[in-house]
View 1: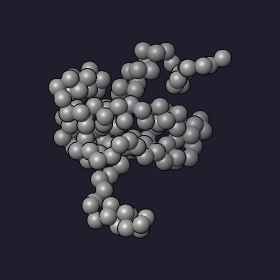
View 2 (view 1 turned 180 degrees about the vertical axis):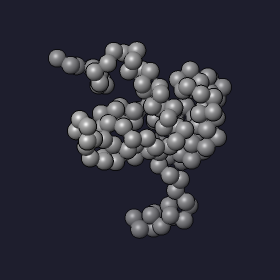
View 3 (view 1 turned 30 degrees about the horizontal axis):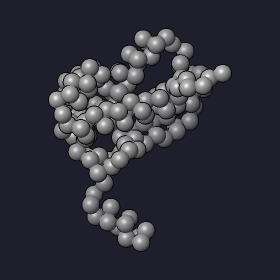
View 4 (view 1 turned 60 degrees about the vertical axis):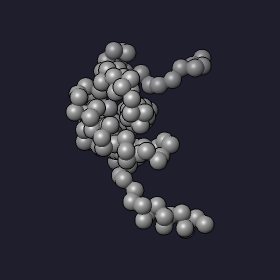
Length: 132
């Protein structure tokens, strides 16, 4: 039974998997969108939310935690200066995942995962007025 077992093994050992997640999270922060296989994209969502959550805390401890997880200082600076202020009013759901079809070589399902763009204040007010 698989009770309380979370995550996918993705055919690799744990150290390889953690290194891959760290690299993918760094790439996602740098370029704000990456194309990968669907199971990897589903797994990287929680790491992307973790990175933004630490960025929103904006403390020295959060900065050190993020430095220990991401691969580059430039990525950490981008999280604290660009990404975290973008999602300050949002409580979760910072990423979007789009299915792209199948890869030609091995028919693996592919997906694009990206951080959501900044919502302008006028668009947010229009959405609120439509709901009311």
